[in-house]
Image (cartoon, rainbow, N blue to C red; front, side, top):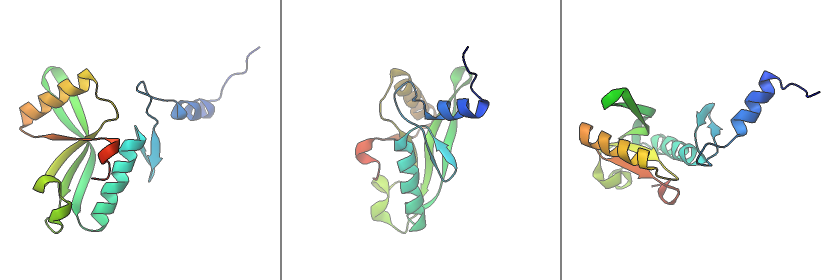
Length: 131
């Protein structure tokens, strides 16, 4: 006879499982992130906000696409003018997505958002997570 798993055990097991692209979720400041990369970028943005380089930022910024599809960027960041040298390419607002692996579907959605909204989405990778 097999032993049944409690709901708490199932949630713990499920929280530790990998996503389909082998990223591991992480919890920082009681917030869950889909990957360690996204969590690291969050910490970096918090540090940038603490020194005044970032005015504010939001997570999971939604963008509506045709056909009822929604694209969620990992971060929408409003930069301060106090630290010009820390701002990416002199931009005041950036939309960022953390990607360890770029799928064809992600690429398509990003291109659609950029075309429809007239913005550029910065792709954050392991190599530039602190920049």
